[in-house]
Image: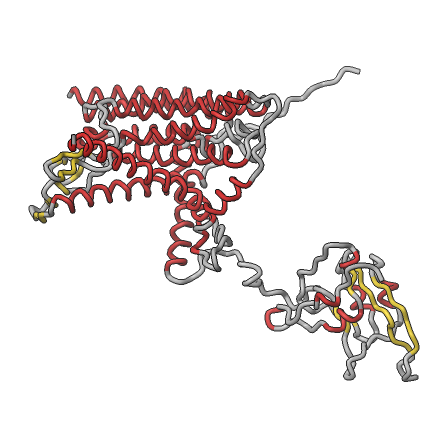
Length: 361
Length: 188
């Protein structure tokens, strides 16, 4: 009985960690977006929100935003499909959040005779699960576009669906190479596989074994988050998009879904290409440096280092995705379609062929 | 009448490298990342990593010749130097100056302005009034740029306000603000 309870507690703790991490990082991304874009453009950025005169570099702005959105009028167009209109933002956020479940944030933790795999849901087809969740997220967007009873929203939802299809195919094909190299669909196994070394020095991370795969995955991944180089489903400033009829916190949920998807893509890139929770030359019993130097560490320190490395990599990836978002202008609808079908997909297939050829040799 | 449609397409010639995107994307990322790290290192070393001014706490220096809010120059006894000659009112292209002249007790001065109103909602800040004045009685050197009101009447600044203003200090920044108690809320 206590065993079952403990199992349950462990499961809840893992889910709690992942949810806390993803939600907080997603919320923080609104602040990062403002401040990073400001620093990139020689500005200061939002810094006026204050509590008792305390500004903390504008860290209260996400809080002020949430308050503002909660206080806004919750508007629904007269002809809208009530149930679907209400469900759409929840669908979007739910699938974005669920996507992170199989991404491992550490190796096995041994506590009190138990072996806990640091992964919210240990699934042997974890990659497929993440992509299933990511592509399910587009249902929320399409529902929003359709149920709004607005032609602009409908067109926006249609653009989002078209983008998702062309990105999803390329995203699936681009990670095939990774699955072939590490011989598994389980993200934990892939992360473990990246702990091997060439000549005992260079770690076999996905970024080195699958450089083309990384570029293709990142491109298609950014497309699936519907953020700036590929933000024509939204196009807030002129062509407007699927959430035009949404206001208040429901609109906020769509925004949050975008940020959470960015975190998920950052987590996936980390797990597949940046070695996951691996720290270079850190093994289960401590550091084994290439020169033969060994620095033994206790188990808990190793696990903490791994989790810390994973968080660091995800945050760095979020920074990089933000850098791309504030550097590139928007692709036109037809340009993005062309890029997806005539650029990414053939290159992804080529990547598979080359990878297979090298693996056979 | 048959119309002829001319289709104009502007297709910039693009090199293979540009058509490949990736290299150009990396060049763009290098530019923005360079800005990010340069500004970030300035912030972290206690400097300022932005070229913007944090108005209103931090004000941009103004050029000494900038035409800002008008002021009426005072005599030593505090009365206006203006002799109500109507030169500025006449030259004003926006007709924003309104003067009512009155007899001055001193026969050497002859007249003084009983009322001297400037409607800043109409003023175009051309500075002709300053140039036309034979007595150097009106100047536009206060450095005050922020004056606003909730009504058109509030934009009419009277003699009392204009006399209370002072010339700008260092870096062309204002030394006084127009006293809100003197700004009229409506017409008399």
